[in-house]
Figure (cartoon, one colour):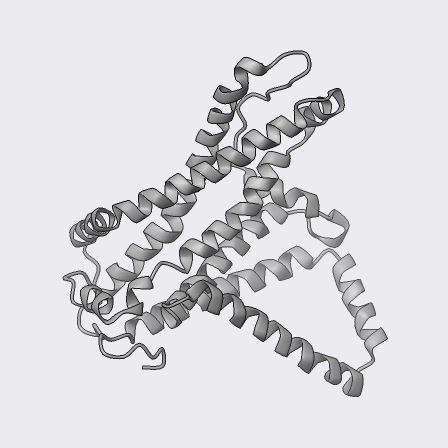
Length: 282
């Protein structure tokens, strides 16, 4: 489908972007409000719990739990959003509207990535910052000797802060912040691919497919090592590899390969979609 028009025109792309935002403004606005509401509630409750004792106040001044919590939720939000990127492919009317629009296939593909991946990243960080300011505004009048209200927190480095606890320099894992960011991009690409393959219930189907693949690999690996390999020697090799300081480089290469594979397959399969059939192999 759309094998003729694969070009990119900036004016046509921005027009399609405005059209998509206007047509889905209610759903997009509702999503942003939900993110803001959940983050605000969590931050206020967290401040209420940690701000009532001297020990909690001392820990709050040096702890980065809020950033780590926001970073942990970040991955879930990105996966959910990416799985909704091509939801219109789930119905014939949605496919008709998408495939027959004047924009090219490339523009449609980039448009959904911009809104449901890049846009959600920006919106999430903005909501986190506004939610933190809301927490301060809601609790500021109750501050005192027995109740501590931390000042504004920067969430721009929330992913790095969430990954800092896993940094193990002796195993070559001192750059976990960057690896976590690449992992989020890879997860977004995986669920974006799932949204194209299974537009209906994409999140659940992609999640099930990931764990089905992992389970199959685990089942295959067990008899392989039991029959053809020495498990003790293999575990020793794994330990030596991890302690040699090469883990960061290996994980970097693995994540980059995942990103290229997921987004490349998503683009390839999206080009093969048509209005009549929902089958991913056509």
